[in-house]
Length: 303
Image (cartoon, rainbow, N blue to C red; front, side, top):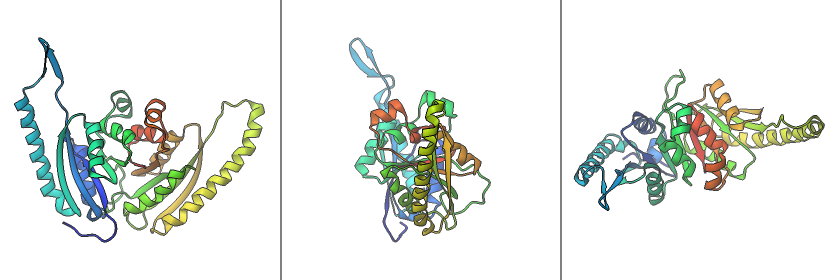
């Protein structure tokens, strides 16, 4: 196995037969971050549905057929371990059965993962909203930092960095102080372009007599937002990053972040989770949930 100085990242990589999952594994294995990763390759095989016949519950396929599939999945995972394992600090593999999303979250807890890396199956944003996905399930329900990896669509020359142009969506939440730490953990290449973005949520529905009061208040918020970004900027520049702070205004924070990332051809969006309860994230939505579902780029949700 590769040796690397510095702290290790315990990394759970969700693997299935899809190309996006293998793309995520390959991209991580070829990056400068690989040698710092203690990896667990994890596959969760969906259990067959049960049917009740004459008061007896039975799966729709024979148990021996399902067990044969588990064996095939285990062999395929071991092949990936042999192919990629030497590129990481360490590499193990594990196959379980059950609900893919819940299974990966449970495996990340047992592995005590620092983060989960999972490929996105690449449905359109509309179909992801209607059908959901394992990546969406894990990203929004796990308590761990999660990278939803999507292949880069920029024309930049390839490098050994995992990403080349990054948007960090920073708010005034206390949890956002961890965002620069995760940028450091990703070991991005020197001179990587980092766009530090804060979006002020506007409310055009206010009546005219309220807008004057809101306008004065917004000026104070703008000043505070700039101070927030400028206080974060030195931490990123110390890592050798080219930092570009930007203040945006929009009625939809998530959409503004996505439009900015697309406009500047970024291949990673880093966003904090506001630590809402699971029920609030699922029922009400959040900026991170919006970004994961609609982005064409990779998304890192920091917790």
